[in-house]
Image 1 (cartoon, rainbow, N blue to C red):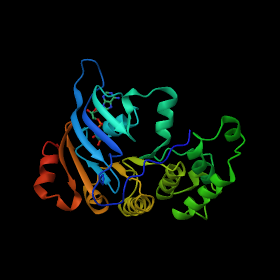
Image 2 (image 1 turned 180 degrees about the horizontal axis):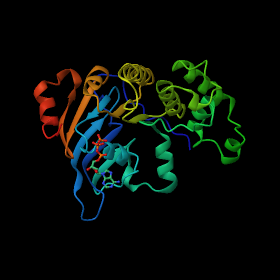
Image 3 (image 1 turned 120 degrees about the horizontal axis):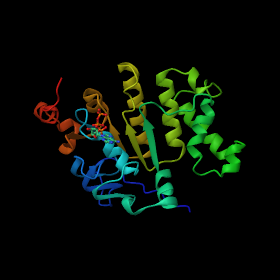
Image 4 (image 1 turned 60 degrees about the vertical axis):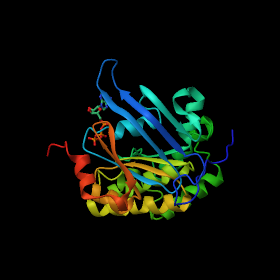
Length: 268
Ligand SMILES: Nc1ncnc2c1ncn2[C@@H]1O[C@H](COP(=O)(O)OP(=O)(O)OP(=O)(O)O)[C@@H](O)[C@H]1O
């Protein structure tokens, strides 16, 4: 089924009078029937122009939150509405179709090492290409052109035919970015995209993601440890502590006491 992208309006007012791309209400998660609540009732919405960092101490529930949105983790209570759909109500093919509209970028890049850079990027279209065509790598010309364009855009035009494991960490994450964009995502979920990279490369990678997200008008929710980097590259911060939201606002409005409140319980 071809759908119109759930494009949000440009930067500025997050939702511009339209429904948010992502709406999370009273989200609670426990991993075990009688286990502790890991997320304790989160509320927030993400719309166009949001490049939103999720920060907080280790164990605050940042990854759990990201994993609930694409239903890798089953919420215990509350609602997640993505592109106007109730995520918790979707199963099988409906869930697969929803996931195609989400671009994921991971901490460990999740590339197939023995495959070429080009094939890794093209694999971002696998959800769309039939199994026989993908086995024979018979990707439509349009997909190959898009992959080449994206590889150029992330600065890897000279590495197209190399094996993924021949690249540096920063280059590997650039492949991860191109692969995520290959599927024309309508939201990007980033789970610690820079924590395997050194500080300089982390900055380059975050700036590149920001640039591309702005260009393509894709909202971003990015779980990130490095507060300084979050403040530099993201325009909105959600601060979490022990399963609660402690802060939600523009990164420019974040004060030292807000940070202190988020990290108050961290044992250094
Ligand atoms: N699969 C799981 N089963 C049981 N408990 C889990 C599972 N995954 C995470 N947890 C627990 O949930 C809590 C939150 O973990 P989560 O990884 O979401 O936090 P985080 O803020 O992303 O932490 P970090 O910054 O260290 O990655 C932790 O106490 C963790 O031990």
